[in-house]
Amino acid sequence: MKQFDVEQSESELYTSHSGLGLVGMLLNEHTSIGRRAEQAVYGSPSVSHADVVKSYLGLLATGKSDFEAVSGAKADHWFKTALGIKKVPSAETLRQRFDRHAAAFNRIVPESSVELLKSTRAPISALPCGRVPLDLDVFTLDNSDTKKEGVSFTYQGFCGYAPIAAYLGEEGWCIGIELREGSQHGQTGFIPFLEKTLEQARKLTGKRLLVRADSAHDSVDTLVALEGQKRVDYIVKWNPRRADKVQIHNEVFATGKVFEPRPGKRVAVAATRQRREHEGKTYFFTLLLRITERTTDKSGQMLLIPDIEVEGWWTSLSRPKEAISLYKGRGKSEQFHSEIKTDLDLERLPSGKFSTNSLVLSLGGFAYNLLRVIGQFGLLGPKSPVRHPAKRRRVRTVLQEIMYVAARLVRTGRRLILRFGQHCPSFEAYRLLLQRFSPV
Image (cartoon, rainbow, N blue to C red; front, side):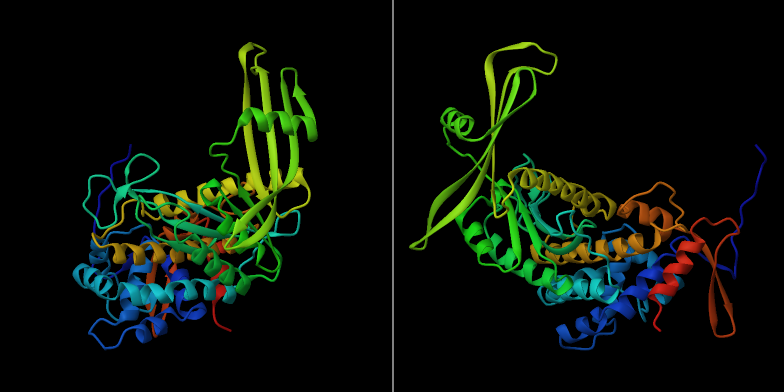
């Protein structure tokens, strides 16, 4: 290996996160979060509320969530220039401002996030059936061995939080995310969250929605709320609770359609109408049941006792096979959770206060949308540095291919030029993104 020396320039400026220029353009030209932050809280501190919020979004957009990370940005000229910040707050100011005004800031984030998607005309893809999926799901954040407010035992078997999130379209746009205590049941507070989410979704698409939720939300309250919505279909996983599997097995095999995918395995599907009472009124809902009976395993080994699997879904759809197939797509939300938790470094939240962590998670959902916009517009076309085809790019891919691209800052006259390397594979994608998001 050839030996080399190292030296530090006394005048030249470089950046390892040139993608902040795109993030700043999206924040300042396609949202009004800065103005909203100033209006949300009375007063004119030395470091403005807009600078505090945008600084933290800049950190999240580079995969950093701890408050102390802002200390490294205070002397970073590009960080301030790219995000349109006059003064970068210290770690102490950032933490204290969030602690003091978390509730006020938290109210402006969801609207700003939706504003971003509307302004950039973010693509919202429908399913083959023509409906736009809206997936609502609870996930967990492991904050074990901490004494943070709200941390408690979760259904995953560790201490942490159990937030709920809503994702719209095949791209998985985050249009709602809410921090919850670890021990809080998924259905608690679900109806208000559902109604807010539907309201946000209607601002973004006029197509018919398909709400998908797991068995934690198998409640008559959920079904009644969904039935009362216009242009909304739903598939909610049924919770069998104490249902008699043998009885259900016999009824479904006697009345439903029976298939035999392989010797030793039979599947029966039937749709039934179930009567439910709610607040003195009677409702009828469609329950789709699928019973799987196995007398041999995959290798043909006989089972001593037949294995019976009972599954069910509450649905407004008329075709059983379609409903079962469409519900499988809800599993994509697990990947979206993972991107927020790992790619944005939000598994362990930075504050000891619940309200502050709630704001951090909301801003995480906003940063997730910022990076998703960059990925959908910049990393899917022929100029993309990523070669394999895909319908969407993971947040981590956006960080690696756009956000962490190195460049040199060149000042000439009143111009600031971001100069990329000769063989930079992301240059064309970056240039096209800049053209798309620049104000006309």
